[in-house]
Image (cartoon, rainbow, N blue to C red; front, top):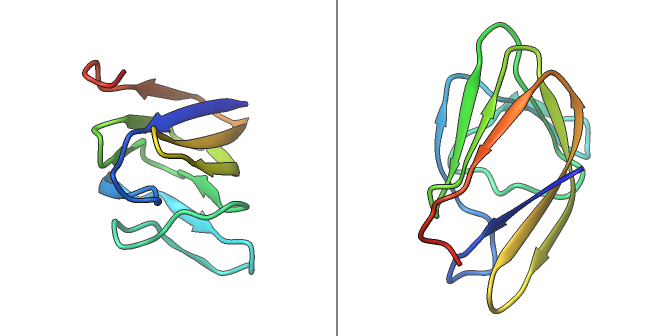
Length: 103
């Protein structure tokens, strides 16, 4: 289980950029490709298939997925100081890069 912190002024996790395809399975069983317009929710599964991909959040936190990797969003907590996403690692490998300017 991993937690990533996103320091934003709004009570939401904002996707800045998605490089390559990250596949989304939402809690209702709908499948799509993750876009920067999507609001990440608890219960979402994010995965890659043939190509690695990078998810960049608004504070420049990067989540790098290798091929055939997947995570489940198990918790999202909003607070005045920072927002947190808790991810359950399912398979493959992922790397996190957190902006050094974040306290």
